[in-house]
Amino acid sequence: MTRLAFPLRRGAAVLLAVWLVPLSARAALWDDEEARRRIEQTNLRVAQVQKQLEDRIAALEQQLKNQGLVELFSQVEQLKSDIARLRGQIEVLNHEQDQLQKRQRDLYIDLDSRLRRLEGGPGANVPPAASGAPAPGPVATAPPAPSAAAAASPAPGAVPGSAAPSSGAGTADAAAIEQRAYDVALDQFKAGNYPAAIASFNAFVRNYGKSPLAPSAYYWIGNSQFALKDYRAAIATQRQLVATFPGNPKVPDALLNIATSQFELGDGALSRRTLEELIAKHPQSEAAIKARQRLAIR
Image (cartoon, rainbow, N blue to C red; front, side):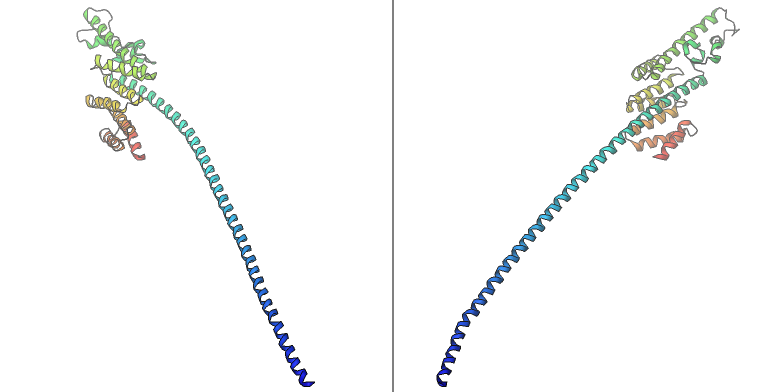
């Protein structure tokens, strides 16, 4: 009995071992499949997270691009506003410049009338109606002056006379006609009719080239050409004044106008040399003061 039981036990152990081996193999196989399944699920989650991150990054990039466009649009609008403001300032400055030019023209006209009185030109011998001066002053006593210029008249203040009074009257008439021609041209300049002023002053210079008013006529021709922005013609005219009448009081102002015209033509170096020439040749003139001021800011 004992000998028989031992083989049975041994056989049972072998059978148990044979039965347990497939179970362990099956368990190992199940563990591998579970691991693979979990790995696949993990990879899937990683892929989903990666896609979500990529989507969020793309959304952020698009948002940044949109913000850049908005900022650029804002900058463009700001530039438009600045340009509009600058245009308004330019209009104001242009208006102020026009007013300054008008005041300067009036000042030139006033100086011209004073210089004519100082020069003792034919305007001093013209009645108030012919000269157009608002303050006649000594002009009312001017008609006897031509008879004083004629040496043959023994009594300068006497109205009656033989040959001397008639000669004086002829001189006074010629002076009055000359003055009226000048005043007509100057009135056209005052009114801003620069082409007509140029034509009238040119006619004056042709007809009265030796008149004391001829330098002033050249001067106003140049100013009229400058007002029409014909800067080269203005330079030529003022140069003609400087060359033909080098000692005339208009010369410093003519040089100043030449420098201004050269500057408007974009030749700053030549304009500077002209200002230096003006200061060197006419250091005490009003134009020299303006020239120094311009050189200081250039």
